[in-house]
Image 1 (cartoon, rainbow, N blue to C red):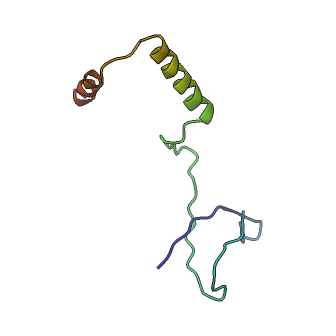
Image 2 (image 1 turned 45 degrees about the horizontal axis):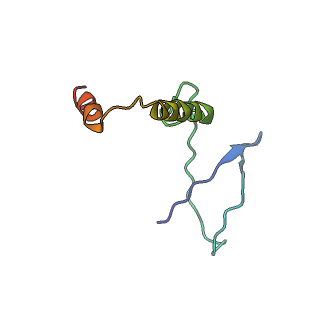
Length: 82
């Protein structure tokens, strides 16, 4: 079985409306559909806003330019302590 992921919305009649067409070779083939809903309170730790990521990278680069760095061995020992 082959799987692809697409995004879609659901119209007032309960029909799925795909954001983009699916490119497949055999269009007469039947498919299985699993619909996943994002919960309102669901927080994805990997879903950090891009502006926050950019700001963090800028701060880190400024620390590097100012010589405010630590040996990697010190960082690993702090991680292992937790």
